[in-house]
Length: 311
Ligand code: R5P
Image (cartoon, rainbow, N blue to C red):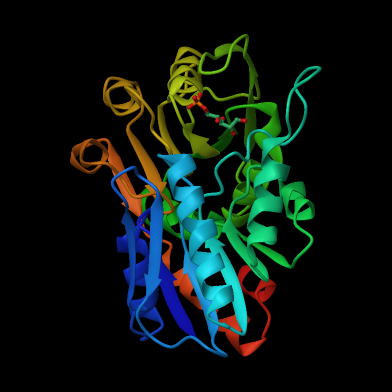
């Protein structure tokens, strides 16, 4: 087995390689003067089972292109099997046509990865489970929920908890977390969004008064959804609100928005490399899921069960 990485999230790739006690494959991923990407693998990969770790996070298009070119280099170097390990799958929110004459970019990206030569895909908390079906190759979708549940038990286990989905689309994810927290009660924020990047909280379904609320979502991008939901929960009498979000996209002024929000803390995983601002924020904590991804890779390489990781 070989672990290779693009430039999107080298600390995560190194942590995965460390868990697997496997040295990182010696590769250069560089730019020509005109910003074209060039990849050179400095060791033999012929016949190898290679895992390329690359989140397609900001800058999404550059990181996607790096991933595609890494896969192409591996294919042409006769790797036996190539797994695209894409902890954060960018473009996932474009998974359907929101109106006439619009693209389904998540499907296009899935096609690009497949066409480049990937044999398998491994991702974490895909925005929608059905994105697995956009790939015509085996696709494993890992869940951060067990790691989050363990952290919540350790930090907030002695409190009167309520799991909250910040929108109707996240109810399945929130219910799964609540189940892991000894069937904690569930509330839902009824969110309406008029324009991308702007959210407006309409209503809260569930009795949150006196509860310590745990908001769970797959993505925090502008932070609008989360910060509005936190404020709405407090307005309804919640005692406190913390948030657990798998992918810390944190665009624009999101870190400042979180710092100035009513949240007690925001916990994100390391699927996306945190910016300095996110690392320095005393409201943001990073939970590593490198061991989860490493263990899934080990099981894929050994051809043993990945789903049993979540039993
Ligand atoms: C939407 O369906 C996602 O699950 C997130 O709620 C959304 O992407 C968060 O975006 P923002 O932080 O910009 O409100």
